Structure formats: structure tokens, C-alpha cells
Image (cartoon, rainbow, N blue to C red; front, side):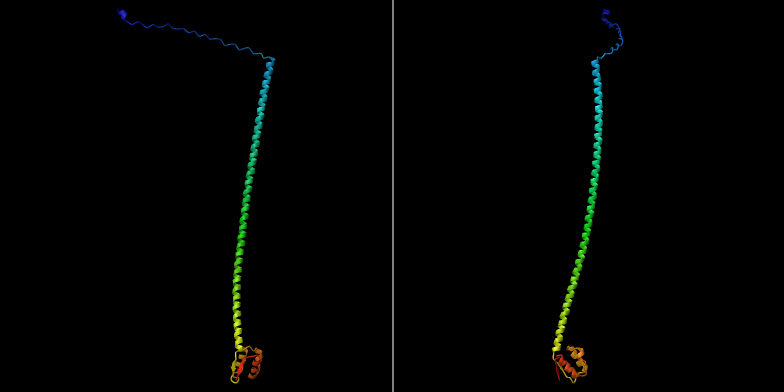
Length: 204
């Protein structure tokens, strides 16, 4: 009964022996013998591949040359563009200088014209003032002539016995008798000179 109550011991499987089998390397395949047609096809294939490679190199060279040419053209166009811009700037600068010079010349001409106009106006004013002065002088001379004529025509009452010789001479000259005409020796001859020159004198 005690033996029946104890658990049974676990069962251990027996060890497994593995045997590895190393195979010998496979022998190299025998060289394949190509037929004449296959050899010719291989030769053509290699020739075509070589020709294709040469064509690719030529195409690359052509593209590289085209790229270089395009770059050279682009650089030449850029140089031409810069030269054209420079020429335009120079032309604009020259035009601006010409316009400035023309404006300065025009300003100088305007200044000269303004100065000439002012000088002309001053001359005109002076001429007008001179004309006014001349007119005034002419009027005064005319008035003087009229007064002289009136004085000459005015009747003077003269006492030949009381008036002095020189006083009578001065009176006759003031009446318009020429000085040479009064060169006479006495008053009675001055009376004749007065009558000869139309001097209105009432003698007493």
C-alpha cells in the first residue's frame, strides 16, 4: 500500500545520436563547346556592344561640345548685353549732359534777353524823360518867346530927356534890337534905331 501511494519516477528518453554527413564539392562543369554559329553570334554581340559604347561616347562628346558651344554663345550674348547696357548708359549720360548744356545756354540766353529787355526799358524811360524835359523846355521857350514878343510889342512910355543913354540901350536890346544896332553915339539916334526895329515906344 505504501508503494502504491508513492509517485512514479519520470521517464527519461534515451540520447539521440546525430551523424553529419559531409558531401564532397561538386566537380566543375565541363567547358561548354560553342558551335561556329554561336561563336559568330557572340562576336557580333560583342562588336555591337562595342559599337554601341562608341556611339554613346560620341554622343556624350557631341553633347559636351554642344553644351560648351551653348555656354560660349550665352557668354557672348551676356557680353553683348552688358556692352549694349553700357552704350545705353553712355548715350543717356551724353543726352543728359547735352540737355543740361542746352538748358544752361537757354538760361544764359534768357538772362541776356532779360538784361537786354531791362536795358531797353531803362533806355525807353530815359528817352521818355528826355522827351518830356525837351517838351517842357520847348513849352517854356515858347512861353518866353511869347512873353518876349508881348514885351516887345508892349508900348513903353519913355522920357527921352530923363532916361539915361545906357538905360535906353538896355531897353532896346531887351525889346529885341540886336546889340550891334544900338552902337550909336547918342539917345536921339537910339530913337531912330527903335523906330527902325519896330519897338513900340511912346516918346515924351
